[in-house]
Length: 431
Image (tube, rainbow, N blue to C red; front, side):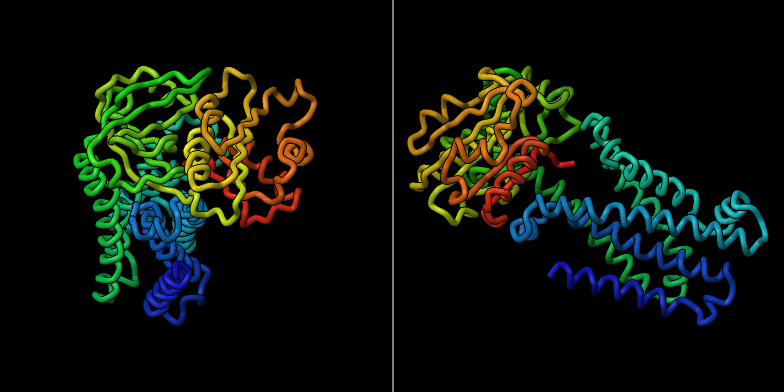
C-alpha cells in the first residue's frame, strides 16, 4: 500500500513538472539544467513531506508497519531527499551561470537576486545540510544524542523556510492554481499530521495518565530501573517488548525525549523501565527525583510475544537489552512456553535483573560472562550457543542489545540454520 502511494506521488510530481516544462527544455545546456533542477526540487519537496509523515506517530500507521520499520524507511529516504535538494541548488546556479556567461559564484549571486524568497530558501537549505551531515554514521557516533536530536529538529525549519520559494518561483505553480492548491494541501496536511499526533495528542495523553517517577533503583554497575506511576496506565496497551519515548520534566531533561524499553508492564498503575548508562541523559536519570512529571509517547514496536510461532523460545540479551527481554521472558513463560535466556555481560556485577529472571518459573537463565579478549572465544558464536542451548535451532529467537551484539547473535543463529522469520531483533537505538 505504501509503495503504491509513493509511486502515485512520484507520478503526480512528474506530471506537474512535465506540464510546466516547455518542449524546448533541452535546447540549450542552461535550459536543460534549469528543467532538471525544477524536477529535482519538486521530488525533494515531495520526499521531505514523506519523511515527516513516516515519523508523525500516526497510530494506525505505526500499528500496521511498526515504528522500527518506519524509522528504517526514514533513514533510507533521508539521503535521497538531501541529494535531490543539493542537486536542485547546484543545477539552478549552474543554469544561471551558463545563461549569463558568468562564474559559478556569480551565478549564485544572480540566482539569489533574481528569484523571490531565495534568502529564506538558502537558510532552509543550510539547515537541511546540517541535518544530513549530522546523520552520517561516523559523524553521528561522535555527537551527543541531545545535540543530534536538536539538529534533527531543524528539519522542520528547513522545510518551512524552503516552502515559500517553491510557490513564488516554481514554474509548475506560477501557471496553475490547481497545482498550487495540491502542493499547499500536501504541506498543510503534513504539518497537521505532525502537530496533531506528535504534539497535541501526545500532550493530551501525558495529561490524562499523569505519569510520575515513583522510585529509582540501582540494578548493578551502570544500570538503573526507573519505576513510574500514573492513572489508568493499563489503558495504554503496553506489551512486553515494546518501548515508549519518555520526556522527564526536570532541569536537564526537558529539551530531549529518549526511547526506553519496558522491563515490567503496567500493574497496579506502575510500570518500569531499565536503563543502561549509555549516554549523558541515561546516566543523569540516576539522580532524577521521585515525583517528577513524565511525558510518554507510545507504546511502539513489534518485539512482542505474539510474533512467536514456536513453543520454545531463546531470548538473548546484552547490556540494557535485559529490560525488554525480562518482560518478554515473563510473558512467554506465563503463556506456557519453555524459555531460555542467554545473558551476555562482561562480569557478574553487570547482570541487572538476573535474580528476578532466575526466580521466574518456566525461565532458565544462562549468564555468558567475560570479555571476548580474555575468554579467547565469542560466547555468542554458533558452537558456543549450541553448547549452552542444544535445541537452539528449534526455538523462536528474540535478541536485544547493542547493534554489534545483536548482529553477532543474529549471524550465529542463521549459521545454525534458524530461519530469519524465527529471529526477532530490537536495536537499542532511534538514530
